[in-house]
Image (cartoon, rainbow, N blue to C red):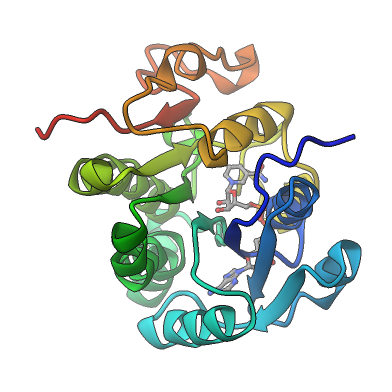
Length: 255
Ligand SMILES: NC(=O)c1ccc[n+]([C@@H]2O[C@H](COP(=O)([O-])OP(=O)(O)OC[C@H]3O[C@@H](n4cnc5c(N)ncnc54)[C@H](O)[C@@H]3O)[C@@H](O)[C@H]2O)c1
C-alpha cells in the first residue's frame, strides 16, 4: 500500500491532462493529497482516475488571469494550496532561422512565466502557514547538443535560475523550491513530432519528485546530495555537462 505521506496537503498540478503531469497527479493523490488538475482543456480523464479528491480545472497558466482562476476554484473547492507542480510545458521544435517572436514569447510564457505567476499567487498563504512546496520542471535538454530548441532551452535554463533565486527568497518561511530536469529516451522536442515524448515519467523523475514534495523535506535538509549525483544514462549526457539531473534547493542562507 502507498504510504500516505501527503495526507491533508492540497496540490496544484499543471499540464495534468496527460504525460508526466497526469502520472504525478495520480501519485500525489495516492499519497493522500487533494489535487487540482489544471490544463488547457479540463483534465477530466485524470480526474476520473483519482476520484473525488481531485478537481479538474480548465485554465491557461501562461498568464496571470489563468492563475487567478485556478486559485479561486482551488480555494473554493479544496482549500489553501500547499504544493504547486509547475509541469505544463510546450516544446515547439523550430530552428533559430525560422523562430519568430511569437513562438519565443509563448515558449517563455508557458515554460517560465507560469512559474513566476504561481509563486506570486500562492506565496502569501504559504508564508502565513510557514509551509509550501514548488516543483518546477526544467529539462535535460539544456545540457545536450540538439537543434531547434534555443527558445525552449533558454526558458528551461531560466527555470533553474528562477528556482535558485526563489528558494533563497522563501527558505526562511520553510518553503522549498526545486527544479526537476526530466530526461527522456529521446530528448524533449528532439523531433518535429511531439509524440516522441513518452507518456510515462522516467523513474528518475518519479523518485526526485517524491522527495521534492514530501512533507518531511525541509529547507534545512540537504536533499541535493544524492539527487545531484544522479547520473544521466550515457545517451543523455553531453561532455562537460555541468548540471545535475535534479536540482534541489534551498539552503537556509541568503546569497
Ligand atoms: N517527456 C519528456 O521527455 C520531457 C523531457 C524534458 C522535459 N520535460 C518537461 O516535463 C514537462 C511535462 O512533459 P510531458 O512530456 O508530460 O508533456 P506533454 O506535452 O505530454 O504534456 C504537457 C501538458 O501541458 C499542457 N499545457 C501546455 N500549455 C499549457 C498552458 N498554457 N496551460 C495549461 N496547460 C498547458 C498540455 O495541454 C499538456 O497536457 C514539461 O514541462 C516538459 O517540458 C519532459
